[in-house]
Amino acid sequence: MNWVQYLNMRKILKLELKNICKYFQDVKANQNVNIDISSGEILGLLGENGAGKTTLMNILYGIYHPDEGDILINSKKVQIKNPRDSIALGIGMVHQHFMLIQNQSVAENVALIYKESPQFFPSRLIQKKLVEFAERYGLHADPDKMVWQLSAGEQQRVEIVKTLLNNADLLILDEPTSVLTPQEARDLFQILRRMKVEGHSVILISHKLEEILEICDRVVVLRKGKVLGESKIKDVNKKSLAHIMVGRDVIFDFHKDVLQRGEKVLEVIDLTVRSDRQTNAVKDVSFTVYRNEIFGIAGVSGNGQKELIEAITGLRKSVNGKVIVESVDITNLPVGSQNVSISHVPEERIQFGVVPNLSLFDNAVLKQHHNPKFSNRLFLDYTVIREHAAKIVKKFQVDTPSVSTLVKNLSGGNIQKLILGREISEDHTLLVAAHPTYGLDVGATEFIRNHLLKQRIAGCAILLVSEDLEEIYELCDRVAVMFDGRIVGIMDPEKTELEEIGLMMAGSSSKTIGAEA
Image 1 (cartoon, rainbow, N blue to C red):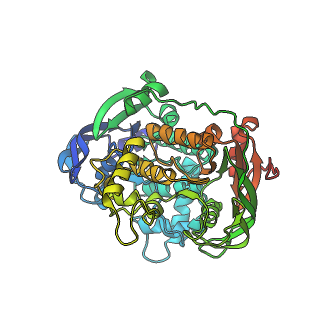
Image 2 (image 1 turned 135 degrees about the horizontal axis):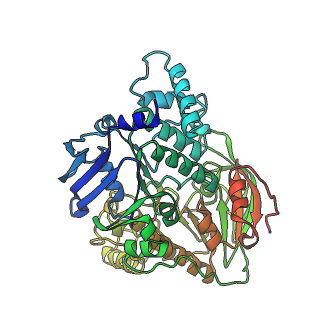
Image 3 (image 1 turned 90 degrees about the vertical axis):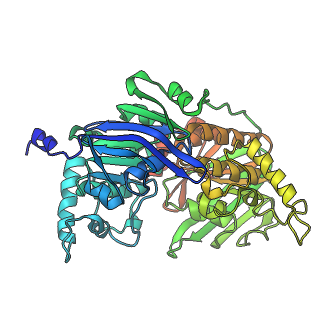
């Protein structure tokens, strides 16, 4: 079959969303949204956190139903009641958090979603299909590997294979590079360009303006649930896109004052920590963090960063080594009994940072409710708590109807601002921030990065874990790279090329330097 014949068989030549509206109680997630995309086009979808991007795509994928409006494919109205309907119409979606079963193999995960999988012994057919996709798109995936053994980039390729096997003409990607190394991101873009040539359509949700400018043909910007603007990529730049998104100019180059390193705050000595599978996730890790510095830990997700942070903050026990804060040995002490001033912005903000079904003011005093200014040991003083919450909302620009709003109704960016405000509103010496800007728009990212720099100036020691190399380079005084549970190098970002750190994150290079580098 030649390319013309293949293109003529496409089911989706044009998709249109007309006057789409979606409401969640008093929150207007989408308001009269009109978007279209044609075959062989990559469309960028931009917007602040809470702008309605993911909600809109979840409507297109059948997870939500629109309260008003129509979906048209090739000028005909269609009803999408669930993801099965969406898949049948030729629409596939790769979510920000991958929908893979970790304890099953690649072939088993693909077989579960492939509608033509035979009932018995599907692995042989799946293996053949995976070879075809590897040759056609460069989507290499070992069918026999368990998903938990794959890197984030490999898992993403499996997700894309799943959509293409079901003949997806339109592929929706939600923040596809948020967990990828620079090299994996480049590989993904090569795949998308190949898909575009073959007539596929791609909707790319991203907060990274450089990616939108590099890969997309057009861009649509949402703000507060409405389409604020639409442009061809050749007619916009990074600065103009950011201004449309947040309604003001955004600072991309942060000024970091040169500060004299203060006294030692955190000392990690030969720490070994086991994962949930009882394998060693952290292996003999040592480093020190001082006042007036941001110490960064870079690495692809799954290389021990999560377990390391949990051991430092008292959420997980270590099997060897020590954690010392302000000369106090807190190794394996649970949260609340450490008697040191640690603030923690967790990686999983919904699971560990807030209680979604409680109000904003309740969440504003989590871990602090026993403080005498909030309670008299028997009863909480809700007048003081509400005032405290209102101060956080104002200072940290949390966009909420009121402090009584349930946290589950806030956007991810506003939840993160609330957590950061709560954690640094009380005295602390060490701030542990895990992926603090993950999935946030340029405005929220700028805001949080500025506050981290202010904490550094104020004399705090900051341990920053991030997969965003731009963030690491802009904020950190020293950077440690973790791979396979070990620190393979500690560097000065001013003296190290970005490409070198990217290679180290992928395990392709090492530059082992002492912990006091």
